[in-house]
Image (cartoon, rainbow, N blue to C red):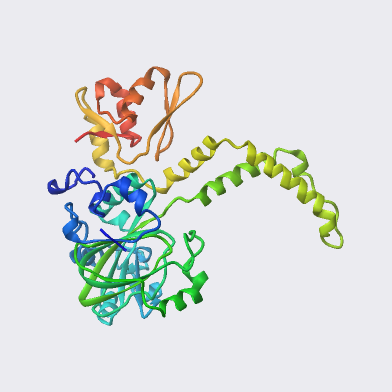
Length: 414
């Protein structure tokens, strides 16, 4: 075990990247020495940026009592069991024809009885975490989600298990005792949950943990996917955030290559031809030549795939796995209508924009929003925007600038 921004980032935290607020070393050292294989525990004193402003017990109370959350955004667990939605939800009441809103009364009873509250999808529902997770995802190049776990004193929310994504555990309140054990199935894929290896996990859980430690407010644990873990709240309510990093793997490259190879092989009419009539079912010896023909077509197609095409395909998947920075529709329309020549504009944050040139001199602005066509005489302007610069509206052209604002691509710079 190794010890170890957005528009509204508080003044005292400016200058710290999201990753630097979670680990006590730079991105290159983290990537080289720890990413995907080595757990890291970092104490609050070693994190100058701090994390406690991101979330807290007041945040939990507001979300479950005043925000009208629905069941997908909350789970409740007790004694290793996840409760059914109906056990903690109720109808929304007059004016809200929703049958599965979180019931604060039911939640109170469960929590008082020792249940763990799990707030899911906080990267979509809690402002500071929307900003922070988007920044972290941009720095890592992998999608990030945020959940919160609120556990009563001396309770264990979930028994030993592993996650199929890397996690950063941020202790926000109270204390929690963690037990960490090496993987029983290394680098699990997203469709390989711990329940597929339940017996091995349970057997490992009976042995002494490789690492055991207590996280206190402000401390952070990085845990690569596959590592077994469980945790118990100590001496009061414990609240921690889990930032799940849904890593891209070489298997994703394989998926893209196989998809491309299938499409390429299907252009061969022999692959598309019907198999022979088989009144008695398929005979192995009879079909072996067909299998070898298809195998050859697929292998040939795999060898013809250009690496750049695979990278482009994975990039397309990555674009839709995260959302761009939030945009306020009413304010955006008002800003577009009031646009003046001297207004400074910039590309919307986390849009993952790049310019794709065409043979005729035009281009396409590709991003997490719908593609935007670029005329040849505007390409230079878009190059400047994509390169991270801020431009005055008159340099873009007022009409084009308004179109880009209404498409959600440009926003007024701070």
